[in-house]
Amino acid sequence: MTFLFPHSSIKPIFQNGKVGELVIYGKKVEPQDKTNPLLQFPLYSIFTIIAVEEGESGYYLLRDSDNNTEFKLQDPYVGVFSNNLFNLKAWVNHQNKQLSDKDKLIEKLQEKIDTYLEIIIALK
Picture: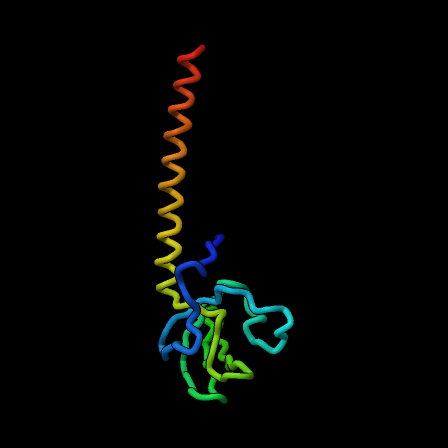
């Protein structure tokens, strides 16, 4: 399944993740960030935040929903932070709206095509 990239209206969790929150890996980690544990997972993997440690040495403790792997996600400069994870519910709602908007646009374009075809047929 292809997801629409959400950055126009949905923001990453940054340092605002909560214990128990479902999050989705929605933005690729930069390849030069070789120590980021998200690199071992495919894009759009889903995790549960099972612990949050605040402060400069803080981190998110995440559990992979596929195989229950637990790992720490920690920014080396600010501690608990992620610009790659998004709240799953907000992500799904955004995706549904994007798809609905696309469906409406496709319907309008199809109506225009039908009108143009009628005009072309009438002109023959």
